[in-house]
Image (cartoon, rainbow, N blue to C red):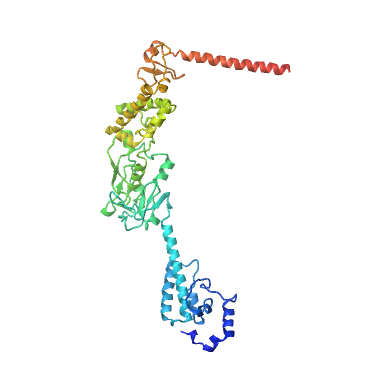
Amino acid sequence: MVDIKGNSVIEENDPYYQSRVRADSYSPGSSSPSSSSDYVTGDADSSDSRGTIPQSLKSVEIMLSMSQETTEVELQDMVNRCKTMVLESAECSDERKWLVRRLIELRLRVQQMREASDQKLLETQLIMGHHFVPQKYYIIKTGSVYCDQCSGTIWTMLQSWYKCNDCKFCCHWKCLANVCRVCVHVIASEAGGYTHTMDICPEQGLSKQNYRCAECRVRITFKSAWIEPRLCDYDGLYYCQKCHWNTATVIPARVIRNWDMEPRLVSRVSAQFLTLLENRSVLPLEKLNPKLFTLVPDLALVKRMREEMQMMKKYLVLCTEAAVQGLPWKTSLRSHMVENSSNYSVKDLVDLQNGVLLDELRITYDAMQTHIMQQCELCKARGHLCEICGNDDVIFPWDASSIICQQCSAVHHRVCWSKHNHCCPRCPRLQKRLALKEQAAEDITTIAENVAKDS
């Protein structure tokens, strides 16, 4: 290797020689990757070689040049080459100074690429509708975590892993590129609820699936235990062992059709789907199976209590004292029980079978009724008087001894209503008042037309 320091001392001390070197180093044609570097060597003569490349390294510059397309592996290879060349160069030579500066630039570029990669690793990834959030160093308090893609264990304190915010899909960082399952939150949003509520386990056989897993499309057969086909009781499809972990859960179709609460084995995608919709009131039972209210007395009782609570809600939303007490929204009852009276969730039906739902309903029902009929004078003043018997007793629409007129919403005693041949005295009065208003409007129109003709 050529040593430029071998030049004569006379040339280095010659002022004309130094001015010529400065002119060459600042000429427009001279450029190098290290020309903009702030690296300081500490030697007095380092400024002479900061912008120029030694002649002996002209061929080496191409091997150590960087571009935007250069990968991290290529940069690391350049770093190793540059280190070797630094060790082989002469001490305090211009070649070593230039190589050290280039080595520093290469290492900085590698560090920048690693930092950018780490920053990208900590960002939320959107894959197949999943919103994967990094969970690195996240401590799991209960149970182990398994990858939904490869079925392997996730060592949460040692490995980088991701978890979907919507469906709780967990996977290794290395498995992100292989995810093929669409997020069940997207499926539920597009379907508006459950996809199978009419048919119980609509199995069609392995031949319809071409003897492949319904999710990952791997070939499955009954002959080998390692690729044993497993039936999902929810969608009736066959899955491999990686996509079917024998998770047991309640099947909505069996509950609706047979009032069967026994858990059945389902695939991972069905388990996540059913878990997502377990607490959502997306089952209109009266449309799906109206006979169920006749066969299950507790279900009919829940329906009646919810309808009466809907009537109480009209009183409570206008009461300021009820708002202070948190009625009816801040009670321990599930919000959809107060919002409507027709939709149910799977958890509601399971809790009804266990006796939990009725206890919750009675507590909220009694609190709402006590506030309206006993505690609050404003709500009590909104009660009704029976126009048929003229009694001074205040009655409410949800009383067992009262009945509501479907046309004018007037409330009467049930006994008085029967004695009056199911005729409401308020309806004829309202009809007569409406007829008078229509007649007055016609008279005004006729007068206006006559005035217009006279003018």
